[in-house]
Length: 442
Image (cartoon, rainbow, N blue to C red):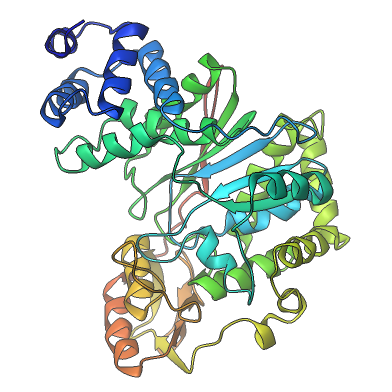
């Protein structure tokens, strides 16, 4: 088998065999195939695409290139949730304890963030003492005992995917649906999930700006799951504006606590209930979506979900008092700066990407992998798209430790919004569901 023949075959739009993809991935991972040949193949895929079977084969070869987490000793069906990323996306912090409270085990491998705010681990480290440095044995034991655990991602998962992603990043082949889908799904499968719920974002603050492309990506990932024996469901959700109200690590943690109390923002609550419903059904915790949603709402209203969150935080060394009293025990910024409307009208747009960059400029995110973050800083929205505003109304509150940065961010925030004289409808939160049987647009 020759790599040049594989490149030619894909260049001509033909389907590669399982053996050819195995040769390519394993050869590249072992350093036997040079970057320039894999770059040529990736560009051929970019223009010619891949069949569902090719995409599934590529995914599984990337899984086999490294360690696979064995969660078989965890009782029950392990359901993982993945979001394609967004601004103010706090769903994992809510869903972990909420779904566990409903009787479905949540064994989550998470990472740190690169961009506007921290990742799940960074947010959880807003709790003093919290640690994700668990052994696999400790991780499994905690899920069996408590129903939920979060562990840092091991560097040995899908090394071939890491190599290929780095190459795609410098060869203008990142925006390939089959390559994106196989990259995401390889990590979820290697992490040991039995079933997967995907939250695919669309809009100005999402990787997939166009809804049509988001649906296409969701279909590709659901097809991979189906072919490799993992039940997979995708929800297409809005990211034209930030999800919820808080953007920033400790601020998002507080918002997650509010949501588990039943006092969170409507959009964050609704998305968590939607994703959680699918997780509970796939995990065998309910026979129907209606039953699953009722169960989740009950766990919020009776305090079980919040109690589960505190137990989870304390089990991993965190200060559980912050769950009961976040204002006293979570990091707090020194300066609070209000951003006020300079005219009356309807808040038509809140550009999610720009608002995320506002939070990063305050210090909530990192521009490079090893940069420090400030857990206390960020912003909290007071208005969302579709709301009527009057001159002087507070649109957002900035939480800053550097007043100079706060003033610059205040100006940037005002550039990221649009106020119009005519009323506008807020963007639809849930756009579509994607399953093995097809796409249901809402």
